[in-house]
Each structure stands twice: as C-alpha cells, then as structure tokens.
Amino acid sequence: MKILFVILGTLWLCTSFLSSASIANEEASEEYVYLVKAEGGKIYRTAEKPAGDQKEWVKKEIRRMELIPSGTTLEIEKGASAFLSCSGCSVLNLTHKDSPYVVRMKDLKKEGSTKSKITEYFTAALHHYIHPDDRPGSKTNLGTRGEPTVRKMGSCRDLSPADNEDIMPVEPLTFKWETKGTRFSLEIKEFGSHSVIFSEKTTSKKIDLPLRIFKPGRKYEWSLLEEETLEKCHATFAILSKEESGRIMEVVNQLPAVLPPGMDREAKCRLQAGYLLSEGLHYDAWKWLERNGITQQ
Image (cartoon, rainbow, N blue to C red):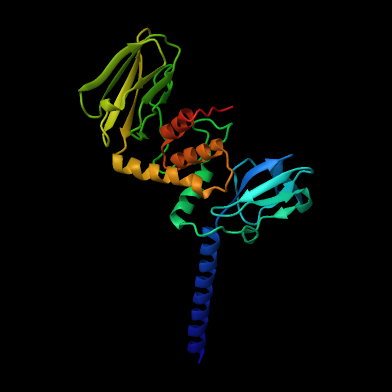
C-alpha cells in the first residue's frame, strides 16, 4: 500500500509539473502589447522597487512601438491618450481616467487570424525597432548573425560594412569610414584570394559601388589605407544569396499588413528596419532607413 501511495504521489507531481510547464509555455508564447502612439502627454510603466526595508514605486516612460508585457501597470498623464495594440489586434484607446491600467491581452480584440510565423517575425521586429534617437550599435541584442566588429588600427574606426557583416544584394553597396586622414586607398578582394576586384584612391570618406562587382553568396575583404600615416584597417563581409535575400524581403514586405490601419510610413519603415536588425543585418537595417529618407535625431 505504501508503495502504491508513492507511485500515485509521483504521478501527481509529474502531472502538476507538466500542467505548470504547459501554462508557462502558453504565457511565454502570448503576444505582447505595444504602444501604437501617445497623444497629449506621456505614458509610463510603473513597478515596485525595493528600497531598504520599504518599497517605492518607480516609473519609466514608454516609447512609441515599445513592447509591453501582459501584467504591466501603465500610468497615463492627465490629458493624455494611449493607443495600444498587438499583432492582428484592433487598437485599444485609454485615457487618464483608465490610469493606472494593468495590461491584459483579453482587452484587445483580434481582427481575424494571423499566421503564427509572421507574428513571430513581427514581435522580433518590435524588439529591435529603431527609434529616432537610436544609433548603430546601440541595441543590446543585435540579431542572430552575431554583432559585427571592426578590425581597426590607429585612427581608423567605424567602418561600414563592419567586420563579419552580412549584406543583402541591394544596389548600391556603400562603404564608409571615419578617420582623421584626408587621402585614402580603398581595395576590395574576394576573401582568401589575392585577386583585387576593386581599387581606388579617394579623398572622400564614402564611396558607392555597383552591385555587379560582387557575387551573391560570396565573402569579401575590404581594406582602407590612410596614405599620409600609412595606417590601415580592414574588414570582411558576405553578400547573401538571392534565395535568402528573397526570403527576408518577403517578410519585410508583409510586416506592415500586421499593423493597425492608419499607421504612418515612418513607423512602418522603422518596423521593417527592426526586422532586418533581428536577422542580424545591421548594414541593411540602417540603409533601409536611409533609402526611405528617414534620419535620426
């Protein structure tokens, strides 16, 4: 009998654990709410913070398109309105009268079905959304391909493309650098080869090259020589295959459809750039904004 109780107890614990894990997985997969926009004032998230033997409330302003987990307490300034939404949801309008408001997914109405994969991409894009005051490299999580680095010597810095960069085959390819020098020699060759595919002397700190020079799916190395100091820096980059680039652009083009109606073009472009960042395409993310005429503060 004692053995039977032990077996039953073990089964109960296993069932409880699996049930808890199932609930946790459901909560983890639950979509985030995001701030579509704020009008007439600011929106804050509030939370308790331990302060010695006591607790105090702290608040942090929420930026537009910022993800907000379910259960977050929002404080809405007097005279302000907060517009919240989620992937495939209608927009929920809140005012100071609703403050403090605890975010609940059930308060947002779904408008039709949304494919889970595009929802996943949409959430990733919001996680990496490029805000107006962001700068290249300012994100703590810069994507799945690894953060590019710059091999630098002397005063040469801020190479673009940076070392270990992946780039989509989009015309033109822009090479930029920051240095105190005034005369440079730029050289590009296939990685692991001594064959130079491009070489030019310039006094500029930027040069655009046609895509026909490069081949999709190949890796390249570019080097920059400052002729007065003989300081040199170099970095590698790879051109994505047409297939992978096509897959990524398909998602980029689908993302605006997940947003609620009436979203402005800039928000859509910043979302698309965020998705490119989530894929580790740092160069392409910032070029996307530039191509669409969007500048940072």
